[in-house]
Length: 294
Image 1 (cartoon, helix red, strand yellow):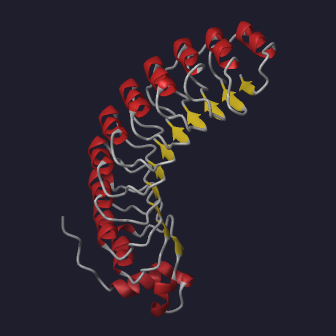
Image 2 (tube, helix red, strand yellow; image 1 turned 135 degrees about the horizontal axis):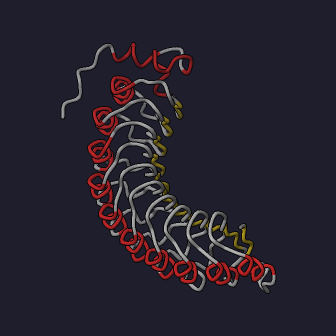
Image 3 (cartoon, one colour; image 1 turned 120 degrees about the vertical axis):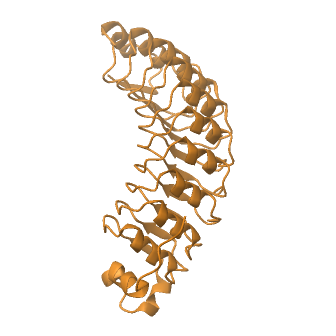
């Protein structure tokens, strides 16, 4: 893939930066840039990558119509001190993600790639890429399925503490892989709006994610069976559990109300099938460290 030839990149870069710098010589002093919805496209990404932004640590390029061409330029550019990169709502796809994953961004800790048409191909490369210092990764609202998540769970991103996989195509097999994988440092896991059922919920409950504080499982396919499995599982450090908009009834609610968290636990069970029996059981519970919203 060839990056288009640069066209007056210095002038374009100054135009993009606007009032953030007065002179081209000041560019190297910049630490943070927020350029969301500037609609700079690939040409702007190339100008940024080739600019003298050697001290930049934070770059927000949300909503700029950047494709894999711009992503490649960013990966090959002078942005080697970045610790935060936001490319949400662009069009980098698998090829763009692969370019970023294979770049030695040794300082990169936080990467936001939601809404980028990313599929399994890109995630599989990411799992074995060079971004092993990441602690925060957002891949929400893409097209990632079980194969990508299985590779991801077995990859080298073991320092992750926050992982967002909401609004993808992940089912039980993907959830099982996450439960059995090596992402043991996760404190926040977002699996909202996927296709995870009871098997996936059980695997997460019995898995390695013992450090989880927040787990999002709303808008999946979890029934009483999955809720009952979650209750006595390994997630003893949970503080927030989102199970709203599933298919959980009274039996699941009764089991969840009996959970014994390390501290206090808030559970969202709104928009399920919990009736009077489940709600009454919750009201009579002995363990007041669990709060449930119906």
